[in-house]
Image (cartoon, rainbow, N blue to C red; front, top):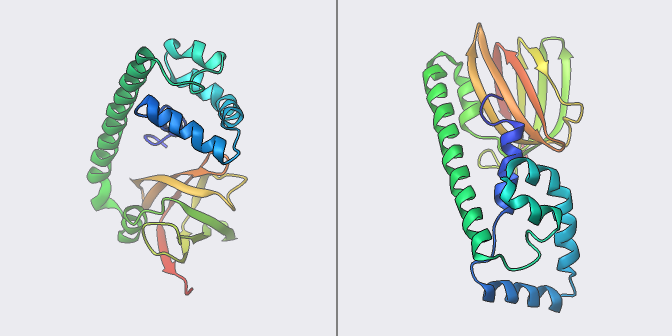
Length: 219
């Protein structure tokens, strides 16, 4: 991936985590709800922060690091200073992300006319959140994926995607069960180059192919 990389995806998760309740009243009401439901939210928050600790320390500026190390980043209502700096970081992140999206769309628009029509469909009818049910290599230059698209923006059922004239560059060992997050596509000699960011364990599928067919399977 040249634009929607694993590192950018990890930073996206940090951006989603670094959100605070709007008011102290909201904070207290949330705590009261968890307590009424018998949920130990303090332990859950502590465990989640520990799981995210490496990425938080990687992507957030040093100002945040003491809060991460002592476990207080989201264990109490944030100070005005913490809230303000978090808001500024979020705004900076949003600006950078928008710029990356514009850069990719510009690159794609320049290469779109060179792509096979089916490759354009593959990219523009997004497979975001499709689940990989199976894959097979019936021949060295053919790759077939069955994707469950019931939770996607398009198709809403299983689809079979057959790549022909394939030269694999990279394929995940845990492709089955993975979720299709984002993809990038580029023109290549005699076909196209596809990069897919997958989530199960974060990984990439990268290939070049001469052609692709997309078949909507019956329910």
